[in-house]
Length: 401
Image (tube, rainbow, N blue to C red; front, side, top):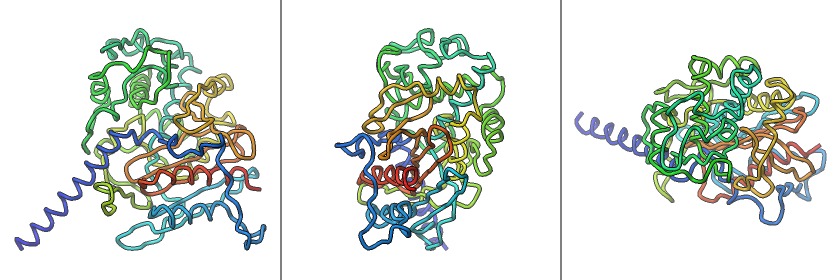
């Protein structure tokens, strides 16, 4: 009995260690921000199209399935999932790999995953709805609504606007870049306080740098203006309005995933076996990356947003006013909670993408919202080429006829 108890304690300790390493790594390299720059093709602003094998008849060629299979075979991701919505509204889901390494169970079709920084697009929509209602202005200083919150070395809420938060031009330091975050419940103001231990990255409006702190402050703005919990406003204003059936904002301390889902994995250290990190308190990400969703719901969200179903025409135009953000790859631009990327077939698509320990997502919708695609995998391989491959799968889904 003592030996069994000792083994159980050891397993629990290893699990806590895996979660701590995953969250700490997210803080160290900014996993909530999609580190696509290191994986994007150097010679072209758009991803290279996935060629059909010479032996495959054109009618039978499925570039999305082939891309998912490649992610599993060549990059070692346990599971890869994709959801594609065509111009006529038809949807198709695809999977590859296994949903649980311990049991070998199948990947749940359109399973729920932690979608990380895709949350930022949802947060931005809530803020723009408040702008539409005249309760908030994009060029309002943060100080007008959150007096005294932003004070630090080179940091003053009087000098930072709502627009600068959403466009990542505020200069606020990124708390996940500097702090050793542990897997425990966090209050959003505590996360802001962690960021304010560090000096400003630059003078507001003078440059661009990705910072999760911007979106934690944006979430606090929503609460200050509405006098309601951010999660409730996001549910009412976005999830319900867009008809998302499998998307939710987990409560602080809610470590599990509610619906059918593939397990998420992360190595304890480089080269180590993958550890299951599916169950983890997500509150360290809050309005910057706490959502759970599915590929089909992300397709519906970005498609509805692009077609004008969530904010006014003027607000959508503001969201699509972009600045250069090649952190996300050559040709990428950042709007208000949206990333615009070029397509190999011409034009651009709009989405975000995100990372969370155990999960990575990429995708978006065409400017009219009629076509959409999202891809998810269940680990972050050391070979960052997997990001380039994920983006190529999205490109194939949006370009392939």
